[in-house]
Image 1 (tube, helix red, strand yellow):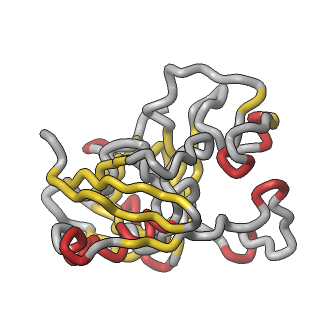
Image 2: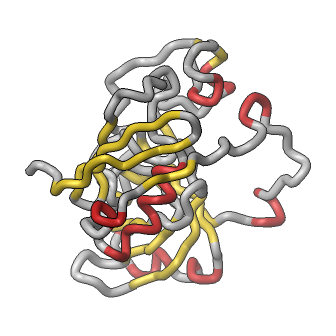
Length: 224
């Protein structure tokens, strides 16, 4: 298989990326097609769908191998379950699946056709292997049971000092606040004194967290 496109997002690395698609609908991304797949007619009719399935490659994990059991974040990173009972990136075939909202279709740009999407849980530059429309009558299952991940995690309260928030581009503030509320920390690291950091929108954001509150302590331009 070869990538048909790559997605552009504000996340240069894995840390900080929401653990599931749709948890942060404020996040925006652009699906940019590779030259062999830039035919506008390949997207004919796609504007009639509100959501899309992105089938993609765990490109930053594909050399890491796999294990029959993994420790999912939803279980605190301490309990092992079968890899096929999770969405862990450490899989026999490093394939991911994300449902995103289609916000806009641009058929003519310097990069060819571009799909503007929201709610993506992908690192910048992730290879997209295929795109399929979300079909509500077939894909929506209200009676479905979610196993050990039956409900979304409880969000944290975010304390973002105004002087630091002003350093974030205005159009990215709402998305960053929502990302922080999802608690980007690894599940096995819960030291309230530890300072964590991740890249977002060309910035390095540093924070601490404890007792249900995440406090931003630094916002600086990311090192080049």
